[in-house]
Length: 83
Image (cartoon, rainbow, N blue to C red; front, side, top):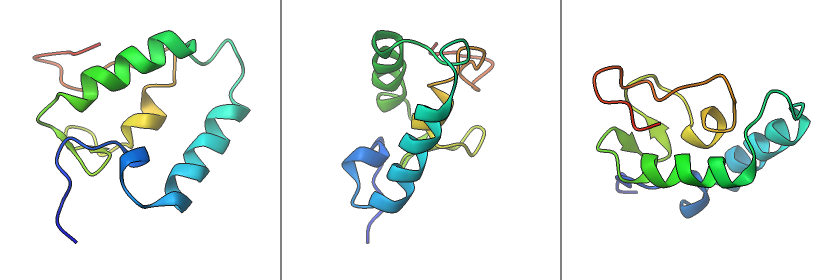
């Protein structure tokens, strides 16, 4: 399978990982996670980033769909933060 550049997990046929991330996000308290609008805005910015490959941020190694859900997290690209 060819690497999917600038793809989110939801766009890749890898349901087990995505389902695990969704389950973990659902378990976060409302104080720890951003609202859906902010979450979608963050994912949109990640999707246009050159460091996103197959749902993973190459700057930090995280799954962007998980990191973007946390209120206290920031874009890991210190020199050019997207969010």
